[in-house]
Image 1 (cartoon, rainbow, N blue to C red):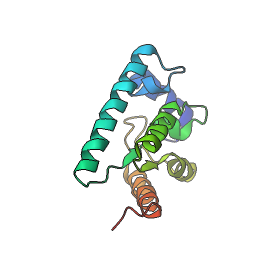
Image 2 (image 1 turned 60 degrees about the horizontal axis):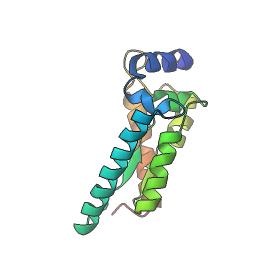
Image 3 (image 1 turned 135 degrees about the vertical axis):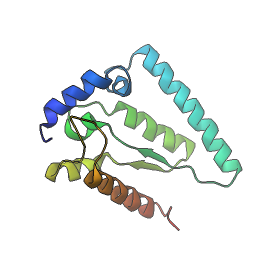
Length: 139
């Protein structure tokens, strides 16, 4: 549906204790600990990839409110972008492309589910391909 504000509210009602914890400002100490654990694992994964001549790419896929609610926290994206720079990991942020595509069409199955439908998947694939190509990561 196209009632984006209502859908964003429903998302937070359903996922505020899971995916939505990174949208709460400021991040709670338990959430910050989870983020730190993720960053540790990311560092280890990046090291493993470098040692095995593989390119690790971190793709940021924004949750529903981050696409349709401009006041939604982007702190998690910013943390990951910073970590990617620090760890020399290519970073693909799908947020701008999904926000742009979402202005003209519904991209998700919301409010029934918050997964992208075919148009949303198309926008994701195109944005990822453009970003990867601009970073010379496609063969």
